[in-house]
Image (cartoon, rainbow, N blue to C red; front, side, top):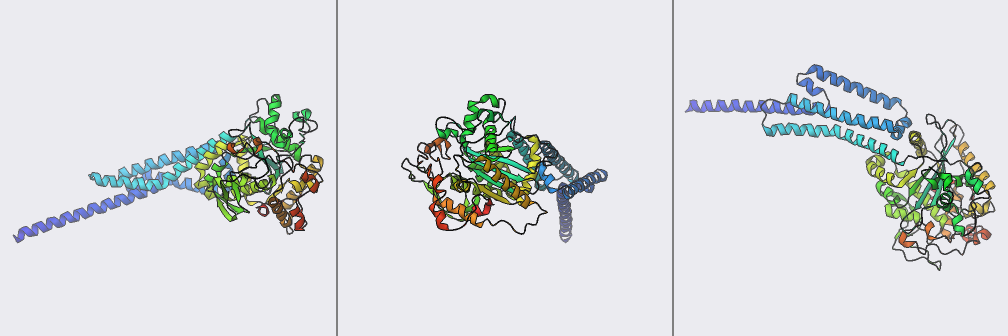
Length: 554
């Protein structure tokens, strides 16, 4: 009996020892499988396929050295420009996808080479799970990167401009060589149900110093009158005395150019992809006396989606801003359905940001223009690399639906590189409001355009000289008083000249348009006063014709 017990104990010990060896081999197999998946070639070397494994490791090391050299030696701006190069995006997207497939194939081959014979199904499944988990750490980012590259490529193709009469002839290889400033016209308008065509009530020119990225934003009032067209353009021959004529004066304002001019003279815009924008660019060129290189039109019906895609924006709300109300025929405001509550550093979602930029009653066009610039500033601040990467897919999808531009496909790399400078450069704001025109002895309905051209040229020339890196910039402009003046004007609630505009020129939902802005009682009052009584009560000297830091406005 004792002999039998001794034999049984020996067999049990041998079985336990064999089980421990199998477990050790299985654990080694799992470890080497994980290593072979994360470091291609190492698993094959462990499996005895040294030549193949060493060759794969050499290729991996060589590729890593090349990648590090590119990151270290190629300027950041050039790397960023690849995000606008459709050919490069195809190479990157396809390269990442192919690399991911090859990486996964090597991982599976290593796993099969390392797998011990006779493994039960459960343990074989365990090895496969190790490959899946380890591969996901490497292959998944490659797959996401490839998807982003192709999405960006599709986005550029979708929004890049077609034929235009107004885009400049620029050498895409060195676009800023002979171009010290780039002027981009941002248009924002509604074209919803109940509206006759689109009227871009928001018109802001971003004048960018191509050397430093310093930017001056010039906001134009929608009720700018008698707008001249530049000499040498076909519209100047048709409207030698400016955009004016018989009938409703609302149909001869700046925001009516987009719709009315192409309708009246379609022969001029034959083959042009965005006829209204071309006409609008000529009008703004004539108004400011500067070349407008490109435009970007944002449909405000989708603006809310952009802010939502960014995860909201943060800005200061100076007072409770009504949501969903309108101006009644008696000049009073209808009851809002809610408010964007006042407060500092308020986080606004898409709907709140839309109404912060759109709401007019109580208030006027100029206050709204200031709020719109604050929204643009907040969007620029929110568009940091982390946010763009984490929310890119949603942002790209939204942008492709609501943005229209005439920027040629080949200019996107240079523009994206320039945007890095804009992000780090100074941002100033100039509003062509009541006080601006009053300082020149004119009004927005009938400006002195020669004087306006001189003033704009002086402002942009001064900003360019002050933003030059070699200049001593120890004495910056004092913009505080101008900023306070802008805030005072916003709080005064005065209506701008010719503010009795029809519903087709308002930033309001279709359901709210019927009686919008019927109060035009102050159409001529601003001409005589040159400003509100609150401005006089301030008792401070202001420079309404000087640009101020965007932060002062907001």
